[in-house]
Image (cartoon, rainbow, N blue to C red; front, side, top):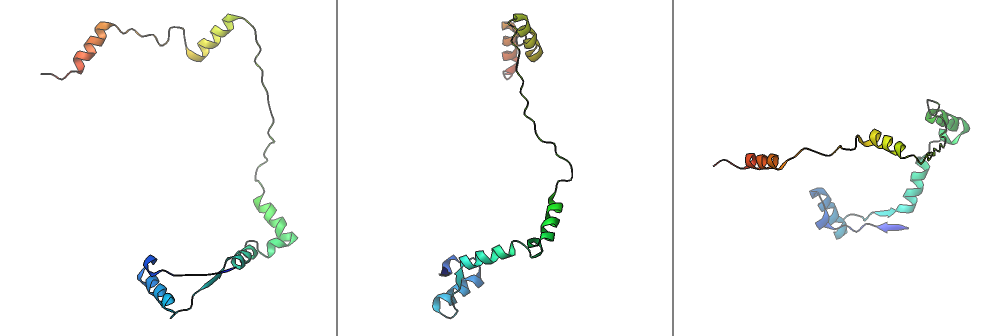
Length: 124
């Protein structure tokens, strides 16, 4: 499937490209034909070298890409929490995870808030 390039001089990015496009549009230069399918097939031939198509090349590629260190296989591990039904166990867990029962409680009084507001106002 060959496509013909149709140049547009107004879309050229450089002066040379604009001149080439004008020459192609006027017929002074031959229009290029591009066969995308043939180009793709040729690119596929270059994607693998001749040596890699031989058994020796395949073995060399395998050794070149082999991991340098032994990688252990992943194992699935499942853990299941044992339910005790004892509320004290939950309190211990809560202390370990989030601190104590009164964490988050602060000693902010109304007087302290008033002082902060007064200090935040600009002086007159």
